[in-house]
Length: 598
Image 1 (cartoon, one colour):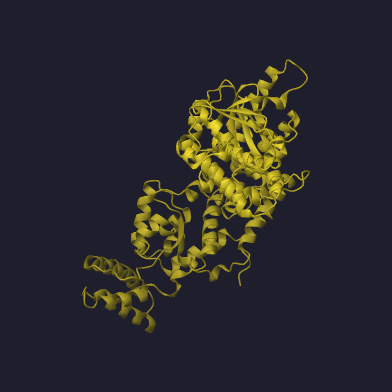
Image 2: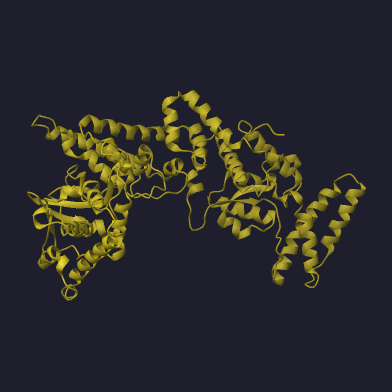
C-alpha cells in the first residue's frame, strides 16, 4: 500500500492532527512563537493589497446562512502547542504577521483605553522585531532601513495605511473591520505536540506546496475529539476507529492511483497530489472554475459541523458509497464502456452517481443508453465531413468503444487511460484521412521523385481494377488517363502540372467524408498525415508490433478488415468498396444510438 498523504507531514501519531476554522478575533488572546527556522517577513505590496481587496470585495451573508459566502477563508495556519496558550508557528507566519499589521492599524483609530489586545508574536532569534511591530505606526524610514525585516514590516504597514487613505472619508472602515475580525477565518491546522516543527516546515515548503483539501479533510475525520464520549476508557476504541478510517482512506487512494480507473472516471488527464480529493469535490459539487483553493474543504467542513461520531461516520459512508459506485462501474464491462464514453464527452459524474442511486440496474442502463443516443440525435451520419470535427470525433470514438464492447469473446476494455493520457509522443487525438495524398507540392527533387513513385503505385492499382471492369466509353477514358499518368517520367520543369493533375484525380470530392476518416494520435498524424494509404498502413502495422495503442477501428480500417476478403482487389489505396464497407460497419455498430437517417 502506498503512503500518499504524508508527503509533507509525519504521521507518527495517527489522528492527532486537528483542523478547525478560527475567526481573526479568536486569535487575539493567543501567543505565537516564531522559531528560528522561519525566515523574516517578506510580503510585497501586491500581496498585502490583494488580501485587503479580497476582504473588501467579500460580502458576508447572514450569520444563520450556511452558504459559502458566510465567511472569507484564509489559507492554513499550521501550529504546534508549546505550552498553555502558546503556539509554535510552523507555516503561515507571513499571513499571521499581515493580520497583526491590519489589526494594529485599526487600533490606532481608537483611544488607548478602547484598543483591543492583540495576539503576541514572539521571535526566537529576531527578538527586536516584536518591539518594532508594536510601534510600527511611529517608526521612521531610517529605523526601518536599518534591518531588512523591519523594512518589509514597515513597508507593509505603509501599504495598509495608504490603502485605507485612498478609500476616502466616505469609506465604511467599521464594516471592513467587522468583516475582517468576525467573518474572516483561518484554517487552523494543529499538529501533534510530539512532532518536530522544523521537519514539518521543511516538507511543507519543499517546492512551495500548500496543504491540500484532502489533507485538511482527513484531519477532520481523524480528530480524536469527534469520537469521545463520557467514558474515560475511550482511548483504545478511538484509536481503532481512527485506524479503520485511515486504512479505508489508504485503500481508496491506492485504487485511484490505478491509471485505468482514474482516467475512466475523469473527462481528461487531471493531476491531483491526493486523488481522493476528487471524491470530496463530487460530494460538495465543486466546479472547475470557482477560483477558491479551499472551496472543497470549506464546504465539507459545513457538512460535519456537528462533529459527533455519528456525523463523522455518516459522512465517511457517503465517501465510500461514491467510491464504490465508481468501482462497480469500472468492474462492469458494459457500464465501463458506456459511462466511460459519457464521461469523456463531459457528462457530469455526480449526476450519474445520483441517477444510479435512484434507479434499479435495468432502468439505469436504459438511462445511460438514452444519454448516449441524445449525443447523436442531431447527426445525419451520411452528411458528416471532416469539418464537423466534434461530431466526427464523437462518432469515431463511440465506434471504437462499442466495437470492443461487442466482442463478447474477449475481456478487453477500451483503454481510456491511453486515449486521454498525453505523452511526449502522443499529444492527443485527431480526426484524419485514411486515404489522401499531399495537397502541398514537395519542394526538393528527391521528395518529388518519391511522391511520384507512390502516386504511380496507386494509379497502377486503379488501372488494374479498371481492366477488370466491363468495357465502356467511360472506363476507356479513365484507362487512358491512368496510362498517361503512369507513363509520365519525372521532369522538374513540368512536375507542378503533373502534381496538380494527379492530386485532383486521387483526392476526389469525397475525401473528407466520414467513410475516409479515422482517429489518429497527433504525433502519428503530423508525422505522415499527407502520406499515401500504403505508407500509413505500414506505419500502423509497425506501431502495432510494438504494442503502441492504436484505436481498434483505426487499425481495422488500415488492415481492410471491414472489406470482405473476396472484394479486396489491392492493398495500395482506400477504394470506394473499402469506404462503403467501413461506413456500413459504423452504422451497424452504432445503430442503437443513431437517429433514423434521412
